[in-house]
Length: 362
Image: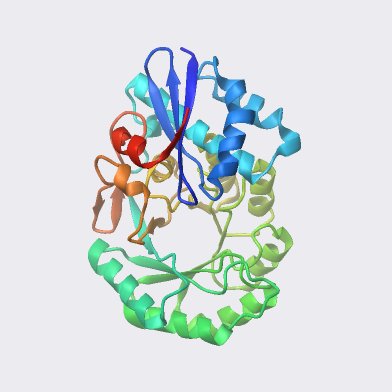
């Protein structure tokens, strides 16, 4: 079997899907993090596609070496994200060909359902509106945990309003009650001392984990945080290199690690992060907010990896672009996501709708 074509489906700042076709009629779908679809498309067409056409889709390690290692002089998050779409599509393709769910190819089914936390992505709501939003998600999904954003988003070095952050956390805790777990996500907002000051002021609200409080790349700062704050530190969604995985995990810079399959180079890379987590006794929590192909990939990763033993992120925004292309939505029951059971990623896409509403590049 040989790869014959790669098709990209894009929407500016919203979606980047990848379809891999073969000479035997078997295909697979993947997804890349869509921060810059225009740049990802250039990388796919000029750096990735010429190398992999004609290759056997089962040669995953060889394909990765050709695409990523031979292009090491332009390595980085964009190349890894573009490659992630191809890599996930190859797993879907192999599963379809073998008539097996991807989790069986990644190690077998370890868990049939995964506990969710409701993840609010907004920073533009009033505290009262945010409180209503997460309370509604709890009632609707029956989740036992929620996450809200704090800080200005990648605002390190800029003024931050810790008083306002405290008020937001307080309003969230009052809305969800004492038993629901409350997580906060800084998206690299704070300096080290700002993060410490904020946590000291919100300790009464029983924070379950503090995600990416400081610049995501600053290992030394995270080592200090992890050894200072009495709360699990969660980081890793931006990472794509196994050496970065190693440094955060082995140096005690976090308690929860979150390499994202649509950013880190795909499922094989994510499984390496999971193995490191096992070696150093921390939880692996795959980051993913897509609710589409990438979400399915992360579910299969969590389903097959013992290290994925914590709550899994579930985007509660109402404007999810990707869900409209699923023929059947993901199934949530009593705060858990059920693992798709069909071959490949276990999802089917409405290709006719994709062809008519997305930019298509063959």
